[in-house]
Image (cartoon, rainbow, N blue to C red; front, side, top):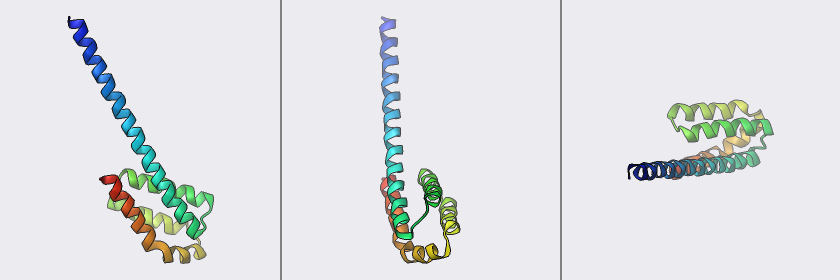
Length: 111
């Protein structure tokens, strides 16, 4: 009888563990998809190089995984430091709308 109870407990823990792993994986994929879309939007508007795109994507992923005010400022500084003069002019035109998109996606993720 106790063996049967132990097996049920182990099976219950295994199910909970796999459900948690699945949910975590789905959440990570969702975050990655959102950041990809945001970076592609920025890439198309500002004409980023692949290196710039990759660096911004990594920083944006980091920010989405842990959205702190310091990371937001670091992300803003990183983006502006990566851009060349012509890109900065284009970025300044779309900056407000793009950051609103980032904020909107972050709010969706929190909910």
